[in-house]
Image (cartoon, rainbow, N blue to C red):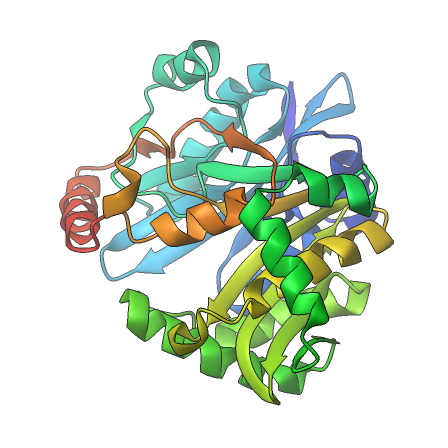
Length: 337
């Protein structure tokens, strides 16, 4: 096997189109977004007898706590390629003076896949950077069937919202509407005590996905006021609920339920087969104490199934890694995650 850098968008996207396990974090446009953010990237392909069998987007992250290589929801493809890929990553890490390699796998969590990482010297990371447990819904059924598969309360609230003439869901491809999303998003961040992504970060995402018509802003209005908002990504037959926000003082108005239903229907209109609600709380944890508990119950109410990936993995390159390890451990405790 050999590693080659892929510089052709059609080759990259064409390979991913044939892969079942993937998210938009693997997409060509996510790599372009990382470039806009000022990060150095590599798109590595693993070839077996000149046949592309796996790929991985590699991002160089330079932070105050240290420099590392990050593979978001990678590698995609055959698991037997991880060894040769890891050897290449070690070379890149040393050249780029990275203290560790972090992989957020897109592999199902099972003993076999965990062992592949263990045998190569990886260890569980102190934090995760992208969802390790997600909630997915097969949307190939009819709208009526999808409604019937929902939790009774969720279905009722959607129907109530549809009857309410004061509720309107607006779909937008106008970058200026990011400001409207951001107002609700920042209010949500203050309520849940998390650090929101910057307006420039959201703008760069929009700029990278919008030329291919892969991103939409959803604005949920009640009496003309935006009280719920979301950003959804539609890529290679999957819809993703990427960012979401709502105003707590309007919790009894079911705008968020109708907004989510409209995002699902948009995925169906785009011939998507799956709708990914993104991250949920691991059900092995005590749900009530987790800051994402309410959001998890909201997502699960639409029906679907849990998908759990191998935990984020770190490969130590230099002793500087342990400073980062301690920093992230403390941050995780402070955020009650």
